[in-house]
Length: 223
Image 1 (tube, rainbow, N blue to C red):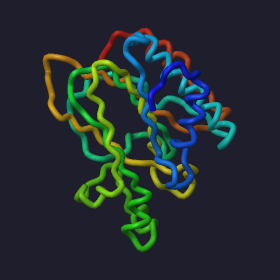
Image 2: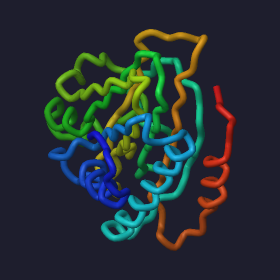
Image 3: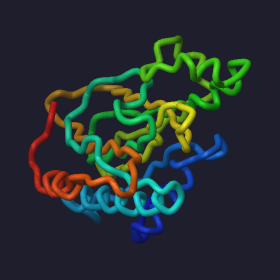
């Protein structure tokens, strides 16, 4: 989805319907693309934080739970990963913010709910043995995979993903994701801004404001 001047609230509303899904009719993720010439890295991180705040309001309205940071970090990633869900609570959202880069890479999303519905007699047969890292032959996931190309030095991208695990009390349906580095180049950077957000009680006391201030003003990049 190319973003050209839409207000954050409108973007969040569209994203919420796809990401906080309760059936496989929605994808469980969205890809938001911003022109590099229109924003700075600081403004990009501000957009991520404002999206988190708007999505949290929508989550409170629908599920009576707000979004709180499990982690909030910037890192230089040039390593491919297997399909997985990130370490977080059983119900969580992942927001990945990709800064412009010449390094060719992709993010693959696999709908493990659709896979479970079609490949098993009952979905619970898969869910009861669910692992946060998919260790079987990835070929069985092929009909359920979406691929997002990230290599573009002209754009910023924000990908919002339902990172939840399949538990009985989870209200939304998660997906796997994996990074694929097509051609690494250690002489340059591939900066990823990563937010993992847990759905928690709306009354829980959190330290989100301090984490946001640190994230906005840092120049640190983790390896």
